[in-house]
Length: 249
Length: 247
Image 1 (cartoon, one colour):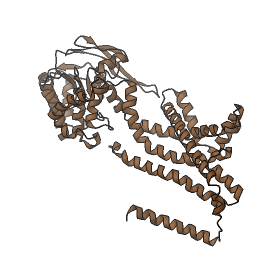
Image 2: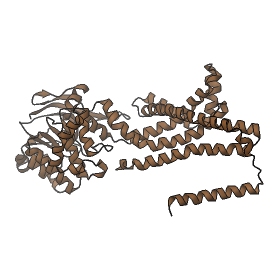
Image 3: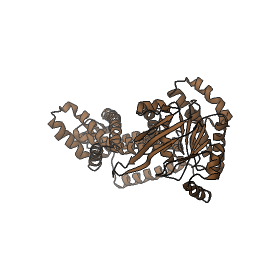
C-alpha cells in the first residue's frame, strides 16, 4: 500500500468545558509501497489518533488521506462502507462479552457481509485451527486468556478478508508471555502477505516486522524511515531520546 | 447446614413468635366470614397482577427513554429527565396519585371510568423514574470500546444498538428490573385510595363489611408474597446467570 497524508488536523473538545486539544497539527507524510507500516512514538503523540482516522473510525478536522491513490471518504455513510473493507484491532475489550468466540467471529460475516451461518462457520474453521483456537471457539471472552482474546479479535478482523488491518497497540494490555503469542500471530500475517498498519511499543518487534517505521510525536513532523535507518543511524535527535527512554523503561 | 433447613428454621421461629403473640392477645378468629368473600379477594388479586404488568411495560418504556435523555448531549433534554427523576423519586407515590387524579386528570376532564388507567399511568411514571436510573447504569456500564469494536467491524448504528449494546445492557439491568417489579407490585396497593378495585381495595372492603381486620389483611400479605417471592427468586437467579459479564 501507498499511504499519503496531507495536512491532517485532529482536535478534541471537552463537551463540558469547551476546551479543545489539538492532537494532530497538520501532519503530512507519504510512504513507499509497503506491506507493513509501524507507527511508534511517545504516548500522547497522536499515534492512536492517527490510526483511528486511517481505520475510518474518526473524521479529521482537516486534511486528506489516500491509500493507493484512493481518498478516504469524508462522510459517515462512506466511512461505514470503508470500515467494512478493512479490519481494526484495539488494545483491549475488542470482543463482545455476551457472545462466544465463535459467535464473535460469525457476527461480522453474517450481519455485515451477508454470509449464511453455515457458510460463515466454514469460513472461520480453517483459521481457527491454524491459530490454535479451535478448542476455544465455544468459550465466552471471560473464559479466555488475554492473549487468546486478542488472537480471536485479530481473527475476527481477518476472516472478512479485509484489504488491510489496523492494529492499535494490540499487546499493551498483555503480560510478556501473551504479548509473544499475539506478536507471533502478527508475524505470521506479515509472512502471509497481509497488509497492515501497527501501533506498538514493542521496538524489537517493530524492527523485525516493519517495512517502514513512522515516528510520530506531538507537534513535529513525522519521521519515516526503514527499520535499519531508524534504529541504526537515527535520522532525528528526537528518535534517539525516545529510544533511550524506551530501552531504559 | 443446607439452605432449605436454614430457611425452615427461620420461618418456624417467626411462626412461633406470631403464634405466641396471638395466644397472648387471646384472639378469636373469624375466618368463616372472610372465606365468604374469597371471590372478591381472587378478583382483586388478578387486578393487581394486571396493574403491575401494565405498569411494568409502560414504566420500562418511560425508563428507557428517560435513561437516554439523562445521557443526552443537549443540556435541556438532560435537565428535563433529571428533574423528572428527582421530582418523582423525592415525593411519595400517595401524593403523586392524588395530584394525578384530583388535579391533572380532573383538569383534563377524565371520566371516573378511567381511574384505573390513570392509576396505572401514575404508577408507571413513578416506577419509570427508578427504571431510568437502572437503565442509565446499564448503558453506562458498556465500555466505549464496545461501540468502537462494533463500528470497526462495520455494524450500522441500529445494528450496534440491537446486537451489541442492548443484549449486554439488558443482562446487566435484568436483576434490578426484577427487583423493581417487586416494589411495583407492592406500590400498586396505593391505587386503592383512588378506589381502583385491586387487591388491597378488596381487603379493605372485606374488612369494613366483616369487621375482621386481621382475617382480611393477613390473606392480603400472603397474596402479595405469592407474587413478590417468585420475583425475588427470579432476580437472584438472573444475577447468578449473568455474572460472567463481570470479567
